[in-house]
Structures are given as structure tokens and as C-alpha cells.
Image (cartoon, rainbow, N blue to C red; front, side, top):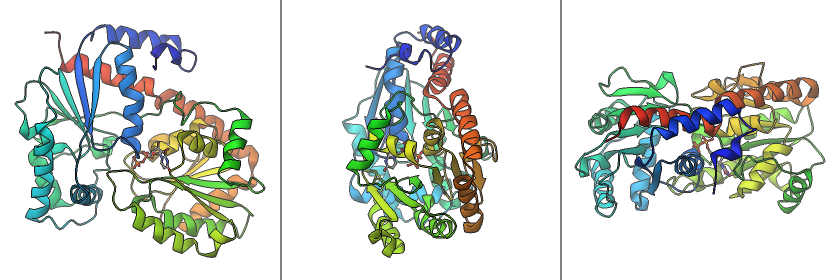
Length: 405
Ligand code: UDP
């Protein structure tokens, strides 16, 4: 089991002591997190890090995963896209499917004596309607909310208003049209999980061999769900430009989250776009790789790309930075919180293929610059984006919202 004490040495003693102190005020509080997937995507990643630590410090924290049909996840993916700016055809049928799946889940997902309920993202948002509310309910939205589809937003607002607090990942996502209190909490990575823990060189090599990734040329990598907002097709276009200047390979590592039905179609499109570069071994797809394999890949890559067009936060950016790998990423959503442009990585206009390729080439050609940026990146992540910090935010919030009974 994970222990807060294991993080001593990664973060300072002062931080560990402070977390124990905060937790001592919360002994025996009982909270539950709810989201819609246990596998794939940043929310599950973070809950695996946060929930065991909450328990270790004495908060009784559970995690429940909403069960839904393919149709339900088809609708909620459209809502996800709509919140990030796509137009949504909001039919009565979609609304009904969305709400009914939540009602049905509520019947075998009982909430009674919890001190707080934390709902992640839009999939389980309406479930609040189906309980007698006896405690604070928090909606933790991990999505970029700067330009939601107006009709969809009005519809969802009806549910958001029932909550006591909404939490977003970036100040820019705070909504002036909500009367519900809103706060910002930055996401975080777990430096001790299989995805991020230090790996011996021989393990890294073994994983590359196992996955048939040759290391004869520098690797450029993007690790992401196959999702249009991550723009994997654009990554292929950037790679084509980079390899005109530097001989290298591209690895596209991707998985399919169980609550994201669009992955397969997007994967097929990207593969087509990659064309003969797949057969020649210049573009390598790594599908459904284990956390250790992703860890090894992020370590061994010369540059990690995150060419997102929209991004709630983008844990993959901090993951790569923590491993001392320089990152070139779109200046969108939560990514600029993680990268100081020109200092701890490069921020680019993700629609500008030339600029993105140019930054990658700069890092490939200038190892001294790449390693200076990478070093700055490690410290930036240590200070701001480790799970200990996230735990601190939640302990503080729970102390405020759930006074001792
Ligand atoms: N991920 C993974 N394998 C993959 C693709 C992604 O383990 O093939 C992980 C990635 O390492 C990160 C998470 O999925 O921890 C994605 O989180 P992020 O915040 O970057 O994006 P989201 O998918 O939540 O939009």
C-alpha cells in the first residue's frame, strides 16, 4: 500500500509534516469519488494516485466508477467534445440517455453517511439529482471550459447549480455565469507509481526491445488517447517536417479509455495518414502499453510532443518533464501552467506545424539546451505538480467543507 512516508526525500520534510498535520484534522472523515472509467485518461490516473494516499493519512476515501452502455458513452463523449467547443446537437434522446444512465447507476450505488461526495467530469454530473443530499457535493471538472457549446452548457448548468462547489484545473475555466462557488486545483502526477518511478537503464532497454522500438535514431514521442483534441494526425505532419532536417523516428503511444468510444476510428485515420512511414519503421504505434512501458518510452525519447488543440491539463506533459525529457507542447488549456516557454520546454501554437517542427528540431540539434530545459522542468514539476501537493489541496478543502460533527 502507498504511504505518505514514501514521498519523504522526493518532497521536503516540511511538506510531509504539513500534510500529516492537515490530515490529523480530518480523522475518520468519509468521502467518495465518482468518475466514469478506471482505465485510460488522466482522471483515472490521478485517482489511482490520490485515493490510496487519502486513506493512508486517515481519510476514509472510496472510488466508484459509473457503469454505462455504449450509447451512454457515445453521448457523453459528444458532451465532452461540446464542452471543449464542438457544436452539439442536443436532442431529447441524448438528454434522456444521459440522465437515465445516471438514475439507474444511483440505484445500486448508495451514498449515505459520507461527509463529502466528489464527482469527476460530466458523465456522472446529473447523478446528484437522485440522492437525498446530506453532505457537500463537489463537481470536479477536468475539461477545458473556455468555450462550451452554449446549449449544452445551459443544460448542464441545471445540474452544476445543485452542487456546493465546482473545481477546475485552470483559472481560465472559471465561469462568470455560475452562482456556484468555484475554485482551481491543479492536477498532479504520482512520482512513485509505475508510470513515473525511476527505472534502471537495463529495464528501459528491455522494454524498448520488447516493443520493437529501435534506438538507432532519436525518438520523438506523443503519449495520448487517440482523440481529435490531441491531434495525432497533426503530430504525423510535424514529424514529416522534422525528418526533413533530422533523421529520427516517431512513436505514437495510445490507449482507448473505456468511456471514449471515438478512439478506434481516430487511430485508423492516423494510421492511414502515417502511410508508408509505418512499414518503413519510421512511425511506430504502441497500443495499450503498460505503465512501465510508457515510463520507459518517456525516458528514452529525445523529445516528447503534446500537440493538443485543447487540453484540460495534460498530465503527459508533467510526466515527461519529471523524467528529464524536454517537451514541445501546444500553448493551450493547462499546458502553459506546466511549461515556461523557452525555459522548461517549448510552447507552440499547435496549429502551426512549421513552428512546432522547428522547436523539435532545435531540441534535437542542441543537446545542451535540451538538457538545461529538462533540468528546469524536473524542478518545476517537483514544486507544483506532484500528488503530495494535490493531496494538500484536498485536505485543506475537506477541512473547510466537512467540519467535525
Ligand atoms: N496514457 C497511457 N497510455 C497511453 C496513453 C495515455 O498510460 O497509451 C496515460 C498518460 O500517461 C496519462 C493519461 O493516460 O497519464 C492521460 O492523461 P492526460 O491528462 O494527458 O489526458 P486525458 O486523456 O485525461 O485527456
